[in-house]
Image (cartoon, rainbow, N blue to C red; front, side):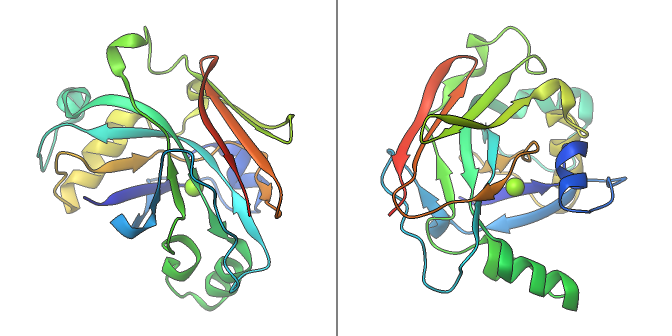
Length: 203
Ligand code: MG
């Protein structure tokens, strides 16, 4: 499986990092070795001194497809969950400045925290989903899918023009505003529509 992630998909987050609001989706990949699940602890890697959390809604792809039309894209994911796109912001900033790819900042081991997945059918409307991250019981991010710049269907249609989607692939759909640094000893909890899906420690 592969992980496809979308950058700058919430305007307020693009602005907080002084980025332009994009006119088409910005994508990057993480390898399967980035997955961290079952609420296992995240260990801060020693190559970065500025690891940021980014809470995101994650789609699980349920069948293979390429050149998927936007109107059929909803058929290509059947479960959703939450994830943290851990980002070495110091490395990313350096690479952005030099025009280099982001992989070292985004694709490292355990950088893709994923929750259990819930059937899409459990939710009435994919664009009325509230999701929240608390660190040490304090709210840091409070997102709502009504604020997405590119809908899940647009993302699937766009990405599948270039990259074949396969069953089991995950799509990180972008983070809302409020990103920041994690520190050793932090306790992260996240909820999707009031249901707790993430609950893990940073070591
Ligand atoms: Mg992200």
